[in-house]
Image (cartoon, rainbow, N blue to C red):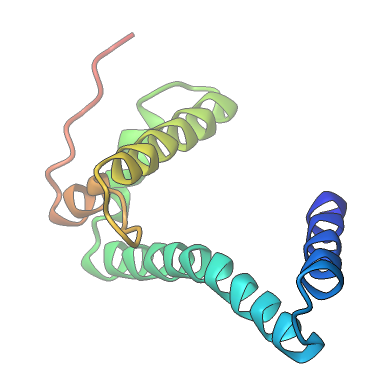
Length: 121
């Protein structure tokens, strides 16, 4: 957080001091930049809430819970596996050139109940 604030301050000082950008325009540009950075994060959170609500409403949340529980008996490993899968899915979406992130593909499979049981380790 501190590094981001230092970067913002140095960019504002450079824009205002060196390039002569008006202070009000520099402030507005900083606000638009912050909103542009926060929008994809909010989009992901909103979609995660929608997917959760859909899986609970359709009764398929138990499928997701049983699938994750089948990965390992230790909850730390379960969380790490889920986080790792989500990160890989996110990287794949970015590499494919999609502009805005969408819920992971596994979400639609869990809603429809087509999640396969993981291979035994």
